[in-house]
Image (cartoon, rainbow over all chains, first blue to last red):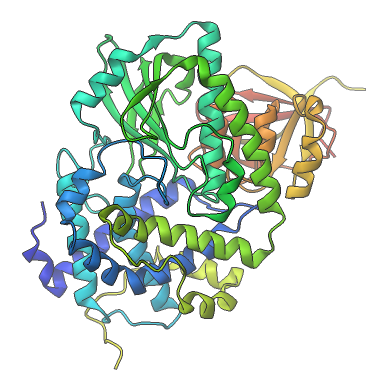
Length: 386
Length: 127
């Protein structure tokens, strides 16, 4: 593990920045492109990351004044979330984002001439140390997400809770499997649209041991399926649950988790290997099992919400799409932590910096900025702004 | 008239499955997605050909269950690859086409193995 004191020197910071860059590169190369004709993803990522670099240190200090990073990490290990929540669930993707989107913002801002590599080094060290401390509470192995190998797993849920889920799982016959499959896919797809093309509101954890020989258990959360802090989420007013957790036991399949909490399966098509499942919610605070017989009704309501939301988003102009995506990314990446800690008086809007930079988001500039994530990292020993 | 098949494109499947056949439909804008959505019976016979690997653009049509999806960008780990897998919809990512593939062309997709898939047309090309 990397000690806090080791991060106080400029040399150690540079080592950490390189490690983080390598992690980002590996994840980005796995997808080669992040683009959607519906929502222009790359420009909103750039804009939000600028705001994250500019504002996150102060927001995290306000957060730490109420709850320690270690305690925050422990708190967000539990799957699901309650119905009254303004943002989506906080999970390992948020842990990755804490430092990674912040450092992307540093790099993007250097490229745009907003700051220099030697600027704000105390803040960079603070954010990285905050993330490391969150990981100590979040990870069962304490691994520093986005800087160290996470060994292909994320077993964040408490063993007692996993046992509750696995004991409730029932075998799926052909009809049950078809209903499970439709429910999963429909919810999964909706969470991408509600998050404007992020894989933010479906969260996988595991693999956990299964009581059934030759099988492993994966938990899948679907967050933010009802109206919340984002205006467009009103489309989901008729979806009966805001958060669902699906426990599934999968036979003859190896699962490997990335720091984005995205699983790789071997063999890749795992869905037909799910032998049993159980559905839960903690919308109202306490965990409650949801009968799988409700799957069709939930899927129908979610499908209708999906079509409504798609028609709505398709009608937005380009600026609204980009600014909505930037707001979403900034809120989920940074404000979600402060919200989790109960910080009051948060500013839920983007800063003037984002408005100022919006006209510069040409395809060429955005392409160059993403390309800079693959260039040699700007060392912190470079000159700071006067 | 020839009955031979010609490979017009190759790419990486999101998962290996049995061969599928269908009619090519180009989808390039959300308006086209919404137009097709009004004809869901037709969607089930279509192989949707698109150029970007996001999950959201095509999403209403995934709910309608197309025969397959062919994408000229991205990888199986792209958002489109992930969501088509969840729907169990055959999908080939990062497809390189050797020539134009006109709307309405009947194609067959063969999943050679976990890493390779081929798109074939009857005759000598999809013109």
